[in-house]
Length: 137
Image 1 (cartoon, rainbow, N blue to C red):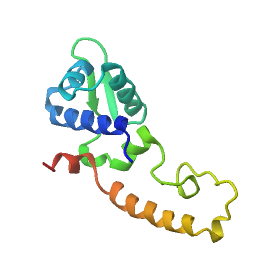
Image 2 (image 1 turned 90 degrees about the horizontal axis):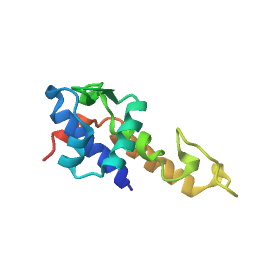
Image 3 (image 1 turned 135 degrees about the vertical axis):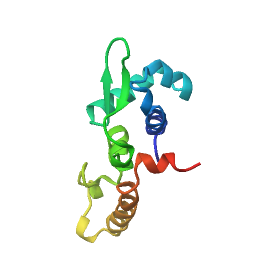
Image 4 (image 1 turned 30 degrees about the vertical axis):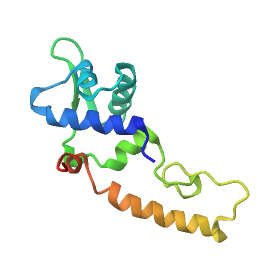
């Protein structure tokens, strides 16, 4: 399930995309327009800046801005930055792999099915971008 934090991240990113021509946008403006707690939004935007999705500028005329085009920001990247693994089990995660306790992965039916689920999700999330979100009503 997509966390509330990830949902807010997508709301903030789409807002920044819509306001791209205005230059850097103050965090307080995003918070007010998208009804997101300022402190919570600060954490989210900082994580996305560290993850290479956003840039920030201090001082007069400062704020946050997209450093990539919306069609270059896969949904999977945002989800991984904010929520971590996309896989439903740690033993099938590509980026956050952990062996499950008392499990023989080679003979585990759950592992096999969850690998298929992961692959199906990734086919969509790696190919859909921030631009795709904005094109939907």
